[in-house]
Image 1 (cartoon, rainbow, N blue to C red):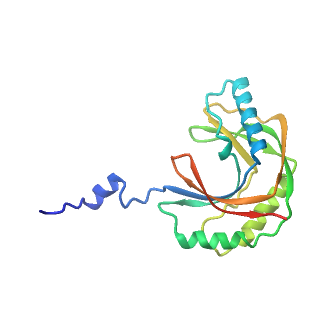
Image 2: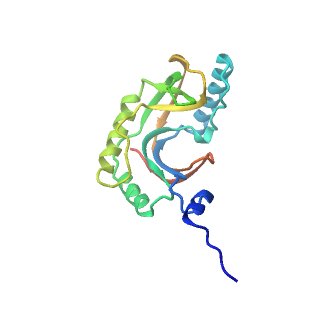
Image 3: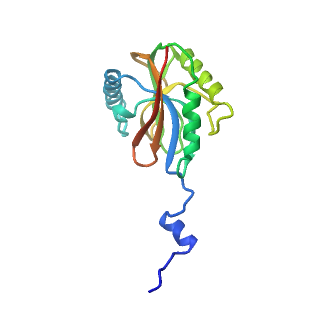
Length: 195
């Protein structure tokens, strides 16, 4: 009996041997569980008030992305080890942030409706810069652009920036997260305390 092996074109059409990204790697800070629950409540209220169709993100997916390190069709293990070592070199005290504005970013099809911060934003910028310094020469593709925000939901409509009930928390740690694209699933790859 002959074993049939599909051609490389057929393998690609089946998703075998494909270079289509399946994983994303990024550094982030996340609100504590009580603050995350309040953020979801706020998102639900804003969604209702403005007639938005998008669904709020789950409380365990709310975060501020510090650095997007790239999308991969299988994450290189050596990259993971190098960025974990770089993260361990970050030195910065814990700090308070306050997110007190909501509005839309322009997207291709869906516009992210986000929380923005003025209070504590400069310290998020400092953490972003310190992490970038530690990541120099490590690999991956650290973001040079950085606008501190928390995505609440995605919607076709775009809304201008508006004040909202302030949400405060202390940033005491940052994390390395592997996101499985299209699965709304995160895997924690490391966490580092500040202070």
